Length: 340
Image (spheres, rainbow, N blue to C red):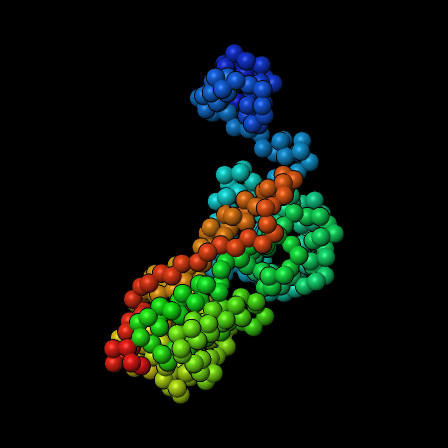
């Protein structure tokens, strides 16, 4: 059939009114199950596609969802973005992507721009979110969901992972292998997740009767280079038998730092990360890490935002997703068989 298939053509073929077809396509009540089945079969056979733009216009919506990521280069953000895109595609929504690059002024400007009726709602990945920007979002009544907020008390719908139990589990894995001299690479200090993960590490150590040696704790940014430099210093100056890192990129830097210091991973030195980025499985050896379900985070946040756009209330403002320890080949018993 040439050209775009119309509701009228579906109605004629199915032997029902155009209004009935419209109600069925839009999920409205009134038609019998048999009528619904017949209409959907005919629509599929004819290749009918709903006019999403017209539907959005009628509802006073743009059909666009805004997303502001911390940047567009990190695999962390891209994995979340992929989950968002997959969820919105199934809802026939288009995605408008921006990046703040950790700049609070740029972030606020982007939100102000999107809030002028350009989008129906906005998702923000690890935003800076200064108080003035939070007030802007609330004043504009723009539906939004914050993914991995820098602080958990932000008064907006937000989604995070269970950072505490994830890091406890990763640390316990090394303790169970027999490690006692375990170093820790903290992440960036302006993130509440950094403190929460470190608390998980500390509690795992102390519950096992192990002291946390402050000389074995260091702060990094979430980068390979920072992890490499800091791990090299810890290994050469204090010689731990293992390192837990607050992010995979730091952990991968620590793996190469151990090698640069003449150590074999995992025979001489073990490393645990946090994230489970694609690089964790692709590295050699494969990195043992705590998995943040990044793709699922994007999907769940997008689903929550769509509910808000439809005027529905969320069951809870703070949504938390569990983590999972993924054991690969970067961890083993310490030299000496569990006495280090």
